[in-house]
Image 1 (tube, rainbow, N blue to C red):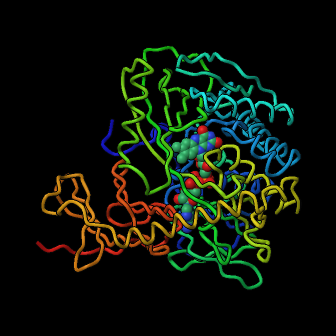
Image 2: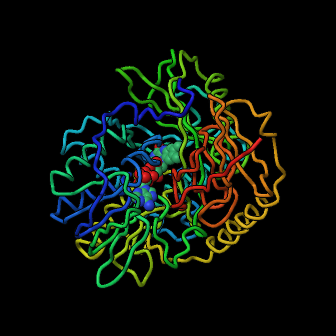
Image 3: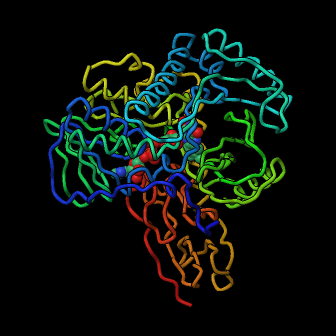
Length: 504
Ligand SMILES: Cc1cc2nc3c(=O)[nH]c(=O)nc-3n(C[C@H](O)[C@H](O)[C@H](O)COP(=O)(O)OP(=O)(O)OC[C@H]3O[C@@H](n4cnc5c(N)ncnc54)[C@H](O)[C@@H]3O)c2cc1C
C-alpha cells in the first residue's frame, strides 16, 4: 500500500484528459465541477442539444466522487422518521422517491450505453449492535411503513459481524462510479459538450447573462450557470459557508479469505462502519469505511485509518490491505440537499450541494432537477430541495450550533499553543509553531525538506490544522483543504496559503 492515500476507483480506470480553458467561450450552460452532479448534468443537457461547457479546477472525477464508496441507495442511514417529524409525510415520501428515481436513472443509463461499471443489485442493511439504537431502527421501520417503503427488520444478516438488529431496504445497488461517469462524460462530448480541466472558476459576473470568470481571466459567457463544485464556488449573499458543514470519512480496501455473502452494510451508531465489495481483477475487494468527523477537527487523522484497520482485522480474515483514501461531504442544516437557484434573485445560477454522503443518488437527482428546471422550467422536486427554504426546526438550532462551532475554531486557532520544535521534527511529520509571532505550519518531507505555510485559511481567516492521514492542511471552519505546499485542494478557499521562510 502506498504511503499516500490512493483511491481504488481512480487507480482502476483510464480517464481521458482535457485541455485548460485558454480563451473566452460561449455556451448555453456553464457547469463548474466535474463530479457526479456536474458530469450527469452535462450529459442530460447535452443530450437535449443544449450547448454545455464544463470546467474543473483539477481533473474531473478527482473530488469526492473519485473517493466515495458508491452505494446507490435511498437508505440514507436513519433519516425517514426524522424527515416525517420535520417536513411531514408528503415531503419525506418525496425525498425517498427522489432517491429511487436517481437509482433508476443510473440503472437506465448503464443499460442504455452498455456501461461495464460492475453494477450489481444489492440489499441495503442499516444495522446496529447497540441497545440504544434498536428502538431507533424500529421507529425508522414505522416510517418506512408510513411512506410505503419496502423494507423489513431482522436480527440476522448475511455478513457475520456483531449486530443486534438491522433494517433492510430491498433492491438497491452498487457500482464503480468512475467507470459509469467516464462514459457519461464521453457521451456528453459526442453530443457537443466541451470539458476543460485545471481551470478554476473564481466568480460570476452578471450583466444580461451570467459569465463565469476563470482564474486566468477567461470567461464562459452563458445563459445558465450550474455550480456543481461540491462547496459552491460562488456565494454572493447566500452564506452557504454558514448553512452547511463538511465531514470527512475514510475508506480502506482489503482482500480477505472470507467469502463475501453480498449486501451493502452501514451501522446506525458511531463510529460509522460501512461495508461493501467491488471487483478487482475478478476478485472481491472489500471496502470498509467510516470514522466520520468534522473536517480539521478531532484526533490525529491517521488514527481514523488505524481504527478501520483494527475493526477489519477483528472481524475478517485479511490477506492484504490494498488501498486507503478519504474525502469529505457537506451536510445542510435540515439534512436535505440544496438543489436549485442559488438565490431567489439569481434564478439562472443553480447550485447542487449538501449531499450528506449520499451523493450517488442526491448528485444524480440534482442533475435531473436542474436540467429539468433549465429545459422544462419545472421539476416535481423544486420546492423540496430549493436552497431558499428555511425551516425553523431544525434549521435554526443547527444554524446556531454550526456557527458557534465555527466561531470557537476561529478563536481557538488564533491562541493555540505551539507544538513540536521544528529542529526536532522527524521526516514526514508536521508541526505548528510561531515565526515572528505568526502561527505557522511546517511539514518536513521524506527528504527532510521543510514546507512552511501561514496557517491562516484564505477563505475567512480560520486557522488550518494538520491532517496526518493525507498530509494536508484542513480548515475546521468551512472545510477548505490545502496541500503541504499550501495549494488549494478543495474550496471554499480559492487562494493558496501564504508561504513563509524559516531561518535556523
Ligand atoms: C468516504 C465517502 C464515502 C461516500 N460513500 C457514498 C456512498 O456509498 N453512496 C453515496 O450515495 N454517496 C456517498 N458519498 C457521497 C458522495 O461521494 C458525494 O456526495 C458526491 O461524490 C459529491 O459529488 P459532487 O459532484 O457534488 O462533488 P465532487 O465529486 O467533489 O466534484 C466537484 C468538482 O468540482 C471541482 N471544483 C471545485 N471548485 C471548483 C472551482 N472553483 N472551479 C472549477 N472546479 C471546481 C472539483 O475539482 C471537483 O472535481 C460518500 C462520500 C464520502 C466522503
